[in-house]
Amino acid sequence: MFALAINASPRRLGETERLLGLVLDTLKECGWQTTMVQIGGEHLSKCRRCRRCALTRDNHCSITHDRFNSIYSQMLECDAMILGSPTLFSDVTVEMDALLERTNAMSQANEHPLMAKIGAAVVPLRPGRLTHTYAFDTINHMFHMSSMIIPGSLYRDKGVWYEKSEGHISREVQRDMRQLGEAIDWLGKLVHGNQGNYPAYYLSQ
Image (cartoon, rainbow, N blue to C red; front, top):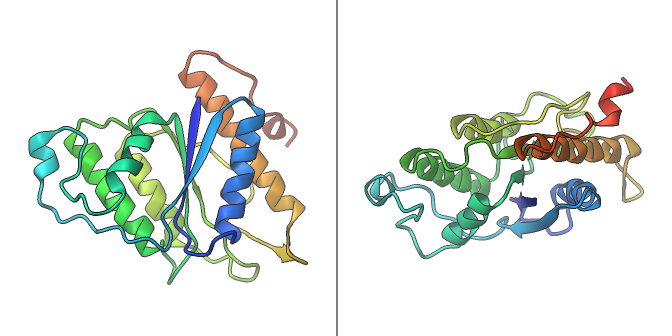
């Protein structure tokens, strides 16, 4: 199985990329193939609402001067995608916003090719700023509208808490990212007809 992580933070090796990496590390241990795509800091055009995708229905966006089509082809190939974005003014970055808009338009125009794929959001926040963030909802709205499967979480919604202590991610956050990876692995096995055990961490609560 193949898991795709997309990092919409322009800061390389920052909180978002590190949290995504923890999820992918867990999936690698479970036998998944993984890759991470960087879109933060790159130019992605917003959807123009030209509706050419609804006419061609070939899973190809008419905007060709950026990387969207190559990224979207990976989204079609993957079994699970983990989308990560820092929170800017309570919402996702402009790069993630553009990706979500165009992905949703393509999905709607092509009879929901992302249906039954697994989608998870990773949105880091600093301690003391654990207020509601629209970034998490924005990503999950695209998953819902594309008929994707969203894994549940425990105390912190898939890393909506990042704690930096001497440059290290806290043990609690590492645990949460591992739990998210285990939940994705379990769901992937269910979707592919190879039912595994429910993640042990859930059962211990």
